[in-house]
Length: 263
Length: 160
Image (cartoon, rainbow over all chains, first blue to last red):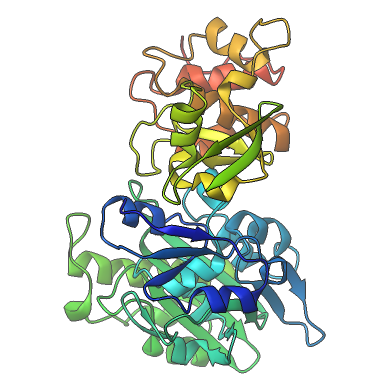
């Protein structure tokens, strides 16, 4: 790692001020950022840890029934504390990485990084969640802009994410066992006003909604409704773990499994 | 910067850089070399320690982040009289190691598991160990040792 200064503020305001320094970077749980720094793929002047900010911790149910999760909440905490209110999201959190990674990695870190194979972006977009930052609220549909790219401005911090709780939902992850990311992951959420289907791990553009599957399932919510649907492999990721065609095929299979899990 | 923490029940302090990893602080500043650095990419789990009671990969956490924390390492696992604790003894009894490189992480992971789940099934143990890699044993005897350490009968599972 290149050398950097370290700061650990205890309020969002202090963190925002610390991030004003040139080339300063926010540090969530560091489960992606620290390996990145070790590879010398980034050279921040200062890391601003968000782990000491009490107002960014924890899971709570809002008056309107939605679930609010602090940006610095670990995956292990979400897996434990969201289980009663939003079991599919808790199950997603419980499948990230491994137990030790889940004790450090945070929801805000994962969502801000927007890794094209990360689990949380699928859950956030699939739930039509709202990303709350120190300055504004951003709808998930406007947040994820492409691989490792989001609507966040320089120095903007995800303070919490608010999830409307669907009637039923399921996350189906086809594990890439070496990285423990999703080779393909599909999140399906059924709300009173319709179904949302999101896909991670598959596209060169990062997480996306599979609108054809949503339309088909809105007409008829059963696995057979997807029978004739195929997703175009042109924009799929191809690497040594799977070709474009393989990933496109997996998207169909995992979506079908998600519907089955919701029946 | 100066950091202080409790390691295996003792107050310690040291002067570290922002980029100093917890694994480096334990090994190089405190000479607690039982915590092994295997992959240095947070995959193998040989560096696993407890931070405020939770399993953490110490090669993937800055030492400065553990300022003020209660840290447990393999050196703190033995009983007060120096004899092996139940998990360590079970690893010996059931041949849960060969080269031993991954063992500190395996024991610390097992301790974290048994704290939250005192009588795990074989499947639960295998699932919990997803972040701990062993290249010698094939895991069978590690799983067996952890089941034995939790007081369960292991006569019917996994070959020696």
